[in-house]
Length: 311
View 1 (cartoon, one colour):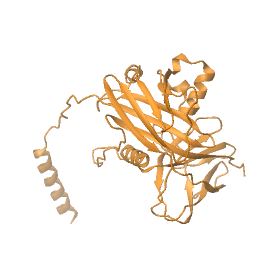
View 2 (cartoon, one colour):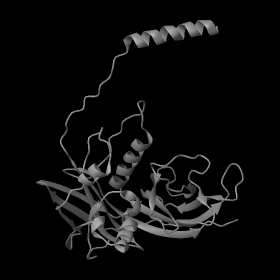
View 3 (cartoon, helix red, strand yellow):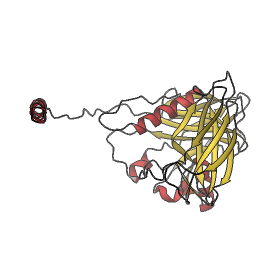
View 4 (cartoon, helix red, strand yellow):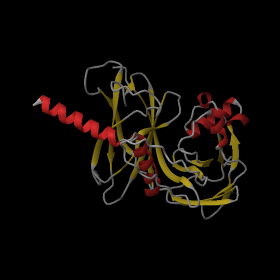
């Protein structure tokens, strides 16, 4: 039986190799697009709007500090309106800021300026005239390099977490790690889209690898779930510690409600990031930006800070 199977396998391999053709990707020069990543936040730490404006890169581009700096779009006219007032966002780059300002910018943007290795730029409402408010619509207008981009978002109501508690993680007993579990009272007959971030000690808040969820499976229910520590997307995967918090660390959780288009963007983007390789399925990343790509999103957010107990 084994011999027959081996012969069939060899014949099949021979057939496949005989039909094998070299695949050379057809790399065509597509129209360069402008990419938006912008947000405005309501809640206890309401934030003025900010927008990161970039150019897209060809798929086979080698990412280095020099070409990363070149993708930022400078000198754009970026405006946000809430129906009552319009504010113009000011361009700022990390290289122009002092160390204290860089630290504040890093906390706002969720980045570590010291580890970037290139000059990061964004547009922000430095005057603080406009703050996110629940239920309001915010329209974004961008004029850059002869192009016009626009997008709109509405900040949804906030559904806060009911409780957070650190517990012993499943598997082998450990005195250094803890799992964070949360309880959410999801409102009935109301479609909700959630996103979360975590921060450790004084570090920036980072989104999880799967940071968004809708309430399709738990609408109107009291729902308990593990909330995983956000891991670096380019870090090494360790199944023994993945998603767990170290005891003694101060953990900050940012829990947010977002609208459907905001959810669709992150859901498709994170699905693609988690499904790489020759046998993965392709999913086009959703965008709510007219005239370009990316996301202009409003969110309402609550913040929770807890210390993972030593015992």
